[in-house]
Image (cartoon, rainbow, N blue to C red; front, side, top):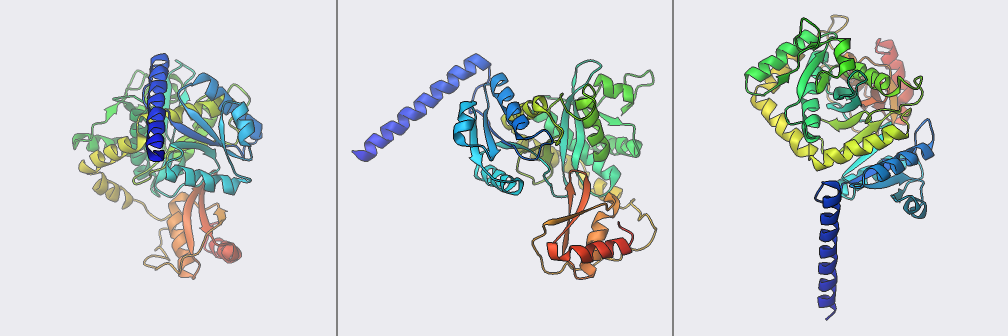
Length: 400
C-alpha cells in the first residue's frame, strides 16, 4: 500500500507540474521546463547586495526562469526575495559549488565573475548598440580560443554563430572588426564558406561596404555577430555597458557571455566585477535563452559542420604562420611535463603568443605549470610552493 500511495503522490505531483508549465506557457509564450540559473554573489566591486538586486530584477522581469543564489545567503533570505539559495562562504567555495551543481544537473547555467576557463574556451558577449538599439553578439570577450591571433578570431566567429543561433537568430550575419588580422580572418571564413560551412557575411554600412566592420558599424550594430580578438572584445564590452555611467558601473547589456569551446559542456556566464544589477539581470536572461536554445547541442553542430569544411586543416595552416617574437627556437619544444601538481597560484603578464612556450620552459626546469585565462588576460598557473622559482625563471627568460 505504501508504494502505491507513493506512486499516486508522485503521479499527482507530475500532473500538477505539467499543468503549472502549461499555465505559465500560456501566460509567457514559453513552454517546457523552466531553466534553473545560478548566480554567485561574491566578488563584485559593488558588493553582494548589488548581485542579489540583479537577481531580483530578473525574477520580476522574467517569470520563466528559476534563480539560485550561490554564496553566503540563507535560504530564508533568498525565499523572501522570490529566489533559491545554496550556501558557500567564500569565492573559491562558491565556484566549487557552482561546478558541482552544474555537473550534477541541479543548475542548467550559472552567472559568475573572475572565473578561469581552459585554453580553447572564450566567451561571447551580448550588447545593445546605441546607434539603432540593435542587439549584437561580440565574439569574443574573455578567455582565449588558442594562441594564434588569426586562428583565434576564426574560432571566435564559429563561437559567436553558435551563441547567436542558440538565442534564436537562425541565420546570424557575421562581421569582422577592422583590427590586426581582419583580412586574414575574412579570407579564412570565406574559404570555410566555400567548403560548405555557411557563413552569412554582413555588409558595412559605410559606402564601400564589405565584411570588415568600422567603428560606425559597431555603434549601429550592423552584424549580428562582431568578430574580434578577445582583448578588443573585452574593451568593447566595457564601453558598451558603461558609457552612460562614467565607467565604474556597467548598466547596459547582457554581460560577457558564456564560455564556448569544443568539448566544453558547462554554461558559465561571465560578468565584470563592475557589472551593476541591470547587467546581472541581463546575464540571467541570456543564460536562460541559451539553456532553452540548447547551446551545447547547437555548438557541437557548428563545430562538426566547420570541421567538415576543413576547419582543422585551416587552423593548422594558420598556426604554422605564427613566428616567435624573437625569431629563435622554442626552448621547451618536445619537453615532457613533470609530475602533475595542484596549481593554485596565477602568474599574469605573459603574452598570449608566448603562453604555451612559457609553460614548456617551466616544464624543462622541472616545474609543473598549466596555462589559462584570467579576468585580466593570459596566466601561467603553478603550485604555491613553486611560485618564486617560476616567476624568477620566466623573468630571466624574458616572458615577464
